[in-house]
Image 1 (cartoon, rainbow, N blue to C red):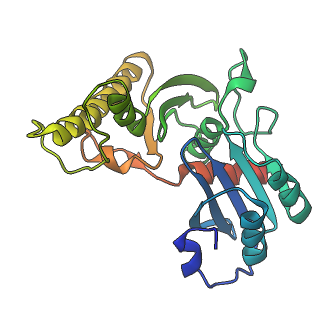
Image 2 (cartoon, rainbow, N blue to C red):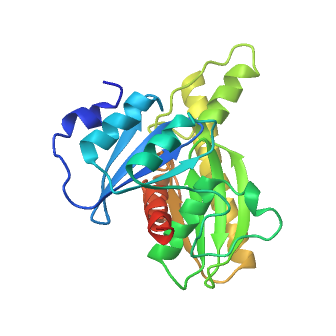
Length: 256
């Protein structure tokens, strides 16, 4: 079996309308299952081989599928999804319920588009700052007129841990952990405090800069690393680790 243990625990064969939303990021390849328009579960894929994708299709029998990819994925999977489902590949030509920067729309990451679309779907007519916490931190601002203004990109948590090991002679590679003191008592806790608290203060600082420039807006946190930061932020913000999938589902429906 080439799919995660979550797949093994799932013995329910879905009979309702089903959509597979694939998110291929720099760190992991994932797939979310939506049934009848509702998020059902997430699958972490070991690879993007034909066997893996066919197992998903055979098990869930999806009506639709959508792919967001920021990596060089297996091109055969697009053919397979096209043959078996109503397939859409997310890129700058996709129909989306927002307007995008006119400079170079083809350079906008598919993951960022999905996050912004999810924010607009959840909070229509509102200003939204969506912060994606994954391989990189992305700041994405969309106004109440559903205009994606842009944002920023900075290194993510794992990238910072790895850079400390790669560009020093003796610092180790530290595994992420939310439980650490402000003043670290050894190398490991010093790195945890420096990286995670440093990022938390960075996030708060960026939010503050947006508050100075723009009117009242919602802040949404998402991404696999979001849980490491929510407890270290001074304010509690809307957090949904599955936000990108919900945006992908909306875009899939929008393009059918």
